[in-house]
Amino acid sequence: MAGETFGIGIGARSLVRLPLPLRRRALWLAHGLTHAAKRIRGGLRGRPAGTGHAELFMKILRLPRGEALHLERAAALHDRMTETEWAALLLRDIRASQRDLRHIRVEEPETFRRLAETGRPVILAPLHMGAYVGGLAHTMLTYFPGRPMLVLRQRDDMPLETAVIERIREVGVEMRFLQVGNRKDFLSAVRFARNGAVIVVFCDLDPSYGAPAAMPIFGLPTRFAFGTDTLARLTNAVVVPWVTEMETGGDTIRIGTPFEVYADSPEERARAAGHMRRHIEDCLRRRPEQWHLWSLLSDYLPPSDIMPDAADAAAPDPVRDAA
Image (tube, rainbow, N blue to C red; front, side, top):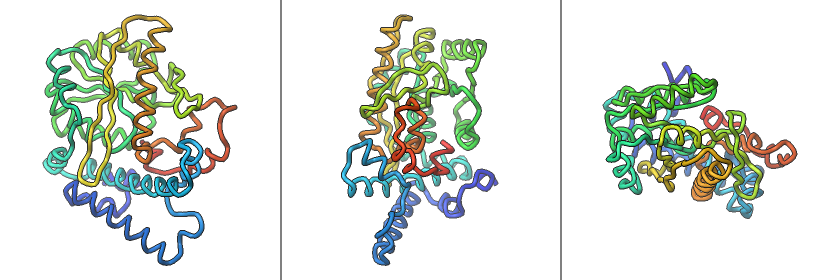
């Protein structure tokens, strides 16, 4: 079974039988009961159960310890919810998955409606937050029906993410992956976009994915991979910063300020990178517990700027690392 192949837990496999709101609430209740039981037993006197991110939240988000510990527990709950949603997308039948998509909403749908009416190429720029695969499926089916989706990446190193996203095909979205490690592949993406595809380029990939740009967040000298400006300029596409947030009853898709790229110049690249930087930081400030990549924060920093305590505090997590 796919879930066993990718190490999805037994609990998650059993929960996928429930509709989305019920399985989310079941996880929320189980998480709360577990935490309460540990408090009663005195199990939280030492290092609290969670993701191991509390020290990181204290340093980066400047939170007092109590708030950082609370956020760490929220991140642990989010990880379990994400694991369960991956299992649901892999293991539920298509009709059940289609019913789950009804529990996803867009905060400002008129933005997508206007873009769809123009017929222009669109680049969605999501973060690795929330159960973003279901959100992508909902966006395509609701606002861009009949248009193919192309997911760009530099290397094929995310087998679980690939397997989950590929199931989007079965709910009625034509989609494909394209690695853009050479000029030929990049030009294929340009042609695909010009022919009406919606391109998905994650905006929070680390610099090793290519074309890094300075996008300092939280006062840190962070850099992110950024080829979106070139793709947008060559295709005349509108870039739509995009994120999905998970709640117990469903998901909310939030859209940042759309932007275009008009010229091939350092100034224009810096302007586009500024738009993306604000989107990344705004999303992390709003729901920091839902970013999958906190444990990899050091990958975005120059070696001399890595904070040992913060890096050590971020324990590896299978769900975050898979995404």
